[in-house]
Amino acid sequence: MDIENIQVKKEAKIVFMGTPDFAVPVLEGLMKNYDVKAVVTQPDRKVGREGKITKSPIKKIAEENNIFVLQPEKLKDDWQEIVSFHPNLIITCAYGQILPRELLVYPELGCINVHASLLPKLRGGAPIHHAIMDGHKKTGVTIMHMSPKMDEGDMISQCEIEITEDDTAETLHDKLQIVGRDLLLETLPEIINQTAPRIKQNEEEATYGYNITKEDEKIDFEKGRRQIYNKVRGLNSWPGAYAILDGKRIKIWKCYISENSFTNLINGQITNVYEDGFGVKVSNGEIVITEIQPEGKKKMSAVSYMNGLQNKEDLIGKIME
Image (cartoon, rainbow, N blue to C red; front, side, top):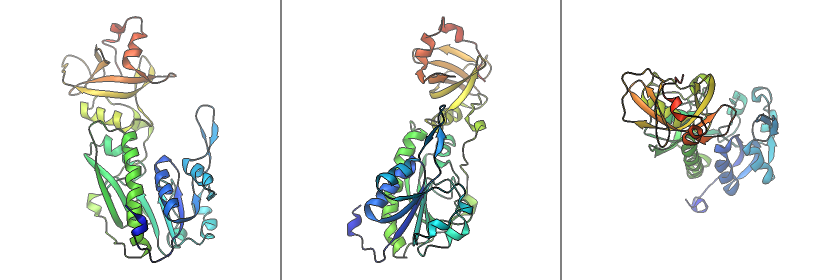
C-alpha cells in the first residue's frame, strides 16, 4: 500500500498505547507515516530468574525514536498526562490495561484498537493462542472503535488469514503483527477523514480468548489427539504446555498425531520409543512427543532426552499426568 497517495484531509495527532512485541510493527508503521506525540506502555517489569528490570519492546522503540514515553501503573488513576498531549486520535494495540471513560471520550477522532482476531470471535487478551488451541482454521485482525466493555466496540475493518496445520502461536503472532500494521495503515485515512464505517458486532457469535492461566498450560491426556496437538501448538513458544513425568514438570514443545491405537493402555501411558520421539496414549489413540524441556533444563529434542537416559526403553509404560 502506498500511503503517500492516499489523501488525508485532517492532521492526526496520535498517542499510541501498546506493550509487547506484537505491537512493534504497528508503532513503526505509525511513526513512518504519522505524527506520534507520545507512547503509553506498561511499567518496566522484572523478567527471568534473575529478576532483571526490563523495558517493554514498545518503550525501547519509542526511546530509539525520541518519542515521549508514559508508563502509568494504574491507568484508571493516572491518565491526565496523556490528554496533556492533546491527541485527536488514540490507537491501542495489546496495551494491557482498560482505558478509563475519560480517555475514551477525549479524542475527536476516537480511540481505535488493533485486535488479533476476527471479532466477535475471540475477544480478550490471548486470541492468538486460543485460535490454535480451539482448532480454528482461520483468524485475522480487526480494527475497531473502543468501548468500555472488552473488545465489544464497533468494527471498522478486518483482514482474514489461514491458520496452517503447522502454525504455532509464535508463527501466527509473527504473521498477524504484519497484518495488523498494514490493515491499520489502510484504514487510518478513513478514520482521520471521519468516513470510516461502524459495524456492530453480532453478540450471538461472540467467543472469548481469555489470558492463559496455569491450568490452561497443563496437558490432559484424557483429551483426544487433535485437542492435545492444538494445545501444544497454541502454547508454543509461550508459555508452553506441560505434563508431569516421574514427579517433575516437563514442557512439551512439539508433537504430532500418530495413527496408532493402544486400547489396552491407560491415557497418559508412554506407549513406545521411536526414532524421532516417544509416544503417549490419549483418549482416541497416540501422540508422539518430539521436543521437550525437562524441569530446570533447556529445550531439547526428545531423541536427545532419551539418549541421556541409561536405558530409553525404561520410558515405556511410565505414566505422564
